[in-house]
Image (tube, rainbow, N blue to C red; front, side, top):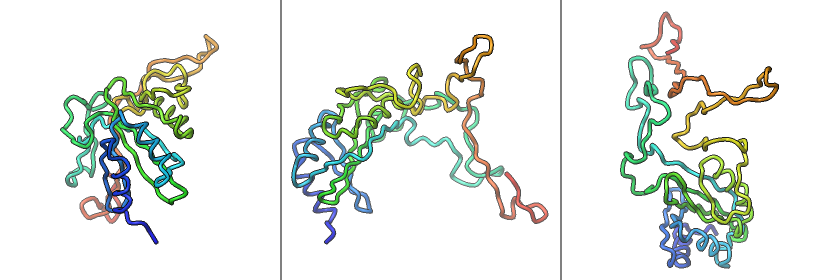
Length: 238
């Protein structure tokens, strides 16, 4: 018999009552637990060790940057005279300001960490989410001692988002170069990057030079096939 999402949510609420978690149930029955960062490790350990839950495997961990959340940089309300969903002109790096963001109750902090865990024994999946305090240096306790599979996932989130996992045994970059400056998945990091790499014939080595691409919001190619954009029976590339 398939377990009711409500009964599972009630079980979680009972076991994790002391940790001030907030349970969210999606229309499809998926459960998400909002966990205060101070209880991040304690909740994870309870999920693993309590025999009624037994979430023995962490299958994914990722960082999230909510900078610009709720802000629209595309014209999407209606079809425009020169195409649909046009990017905002003359906007590039720095177009978002976290201090001026719309008030979003669900995301009080800029960064988030999301974890997916699996209980093979009980055939359950669960999502955990926390929001570390701090913009420049968000701190989250490491889950490596609880689920060893978190090791490389946390290194990835550190590399790409700059989220620091306290207690991680080897927190260093994993995808970018060791000398890379910045965190490329942050919303305020330019899509074109800050430097480009090329081989210098005179110096006989690889050098870093400032990128020369003009920053902009990219605009997708849109092909219209309705009567407004047809000319002599052919599709018009807008």
